[in-house]
Length: 373
Image (cartoon, rainbow, N blue to C red; front, side, top):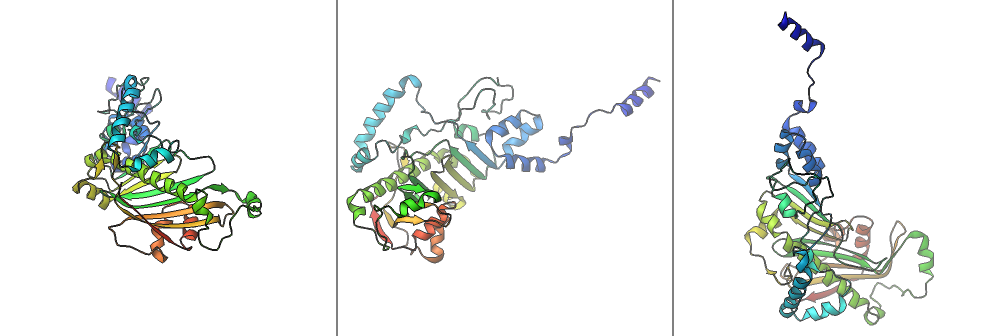
């Protein structure tokens, strides 16, 4: 009678079934790959042992850096920064004097880009061993390198810094995109001294201060500091890109399955990207780097510059002092940036700035060269 009663009870009150148990691992991994964010995956990890075992197999990962702090101990930060700065000044190229004069206030110290993630309280990061018993109220610091070592099969990796490195004035436009292998492959920079929305274009058009546009760079560009400012934009963007590349070395060395790596920032200021071939090149070819300045050395460069005193985009936005610079190493074969070849320039930026790049490359081209630094 007891067994009959038990069977009857099971039929009337069946044990609850977890629907997730019916899903195959491949489908759960697909969901995890869509989630991508490491902190969200860390929370998934503590849900169950099954999720705990599947999270390390995710191959599409996004790391959003909450803040950037120094690797140094807080008590010794100021003194170590001072000594490091002193040592760096002695070992840098003489062009560093130019940096100190023109880049003060524009360029943030790249030595601080150790990119430490600081999760808020009661959030579990992916710790060294996915410790699901960790105290959730403790705030801990983890660098992307530490966090990512828990993943075994990363193919697509995107790291997002909280801000761009270049401190520019309000209203100024400055964007760059760089591709690297073992060194710089290409870089495209788009800048404008001001961006005006469509409702204000009439005022600009009637502004007597706007130079007449015949397709060439006006003489005033060389005399009123316009050229010097573009040099600052170009060099600072290249330094920011090479510093990001230098900091990615440990991640690239550890994750052999990587096929795409992007390091960007929440401001949309700069993007460093590496494809599978470029990642492999860095692994097999020695990196030319400056340990003093914590960045990859930039080779001698060929640059093409386009300039428009005023560029009106189809959506009504006006770029004043619009400048586009396309950069490749001097050792690469020279290519005319026309027709389909212009795609690598225009595709560097999202709209409407891709359109701005396409409009600028149709203007007169100015060729420049820069030594390695």
